Image 1 (cartoon, rainbow, N blue to C red):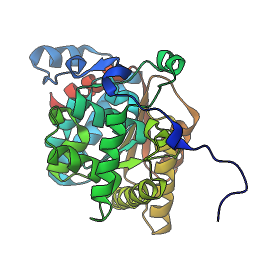
Image 2: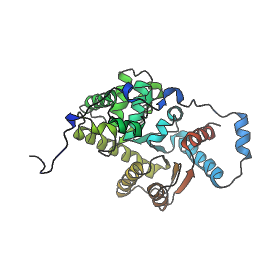
Image 3: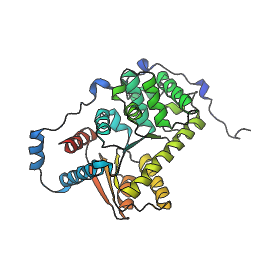
Image 4: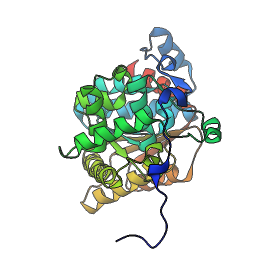
Length: 315
């Protein structure tokens, strides 16, 4: 059986090597986490106890409280911009120190993470490559991701675990910069939530929508289990840099947990982005807070705010 409507034949497309594609971001541009010292502590204490400065202090207290004695969940949701801004090592260090119990990302974030680990570069020039007719057609990226899914599917792994394990098994040359690889090693669930048609690998002839949908659906169930635990035990959920996909995924996981009786009366949520958007405000801040928790909104550039929060947590 086939659709009565024409479908494009992706076997006709031309793929290119990642070297021919070019990249705007190199692993050399990534940040190197440094713990804040006495000078940072003095600077922090000098800030006014108002507005964003007060919210940042409140957020760091909530995360430390949840991490103390593993009393609560600390779920991070990150968008692609967070990875390609060079912040991966901050998240990896936070994982190691117990400030992350689960991390979710959209498909684009996972692709940036995979490219950085595998090739040391990511983020092509979209406008230029659209003109050349090659935007999104990096051959090595697609083949590596497809192989990871083929490996993980019969094992019953989710999409995040499949990608993370494959980077470790392949000894990817820059895997120390990979959030997915680090999560796999540390035993922290890293989930990837895709919307078919939104990511560059979906336009390749070898893309298997059934396989990717199956593994991403499994990741939704893995994340939902953590959100239920968050609703019962308390803790923190942060959305950093996802305007649509992850706020919607979070809302549905939240609804599942509510259906199962999770009260969410000891929950702190935070949305951190360069500007405020409707879905993060409603789905991450306003709606969850209605059950007795609290929501924090912090606006700022990720490449500044994440290192700042990191220093708050470790000072």
